[in-house]
Image (tube, rainbow, N blue to C red; front, side, top):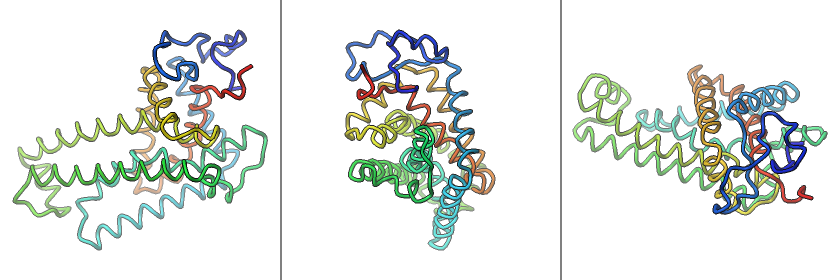
Length: 281
């Protein structure tokens, strides 16, 4: 049902997806992109919750693996006396999350097809298109590494005479004028990087998984889909940020629920935003 192009005559029966595409014929892949209404992100979230409830043992187990990985990385940072990197690592998690959620996309994909999801299939979802999916994952991880290096550079420039410790970071950030500059610059740089990651990763991993799409076209389709649906996707980005931040705020434990929820919902976002050429009459 979600694969029906927005330009099809019967698409008007779906109130949340507009029947006509925006005037974007000059853009590449315009025929692959659908437009949605502002209330659609809430419907994606509801659909994600339904998938989570239907496959909760698998989804929550997969989510717990990410929680354990988060504790392992945090513990390693403390052991290496690099606690100051924990905050950038958490921010970097947002950048890499589209690629990390491939297992949840696979679960929703199977549920949509009437197939029975399994933990093994979710864990091995990358085997659906290994070269491109692993390449996408590595690209987002590399992007996260760039962010970590930039965060360390901004800190070093802002506080050249302060030791890079967790306590030093808190003291200088919260109780100095330089801290305000550090927070402002870091937020601006992080925001730009987060926007780029969101635009390129909003639907590209799902498209590669579902349609065996190539890496570059999938990135471009994702970018243009976000641009063509700027207001709904802006709302969707805020929802992702709030829900994921809530999971992190609970000492990472909440990620066991919030990460599967957003992962499943992002699958439904993809299905409403991108057409499948194979289903086009």
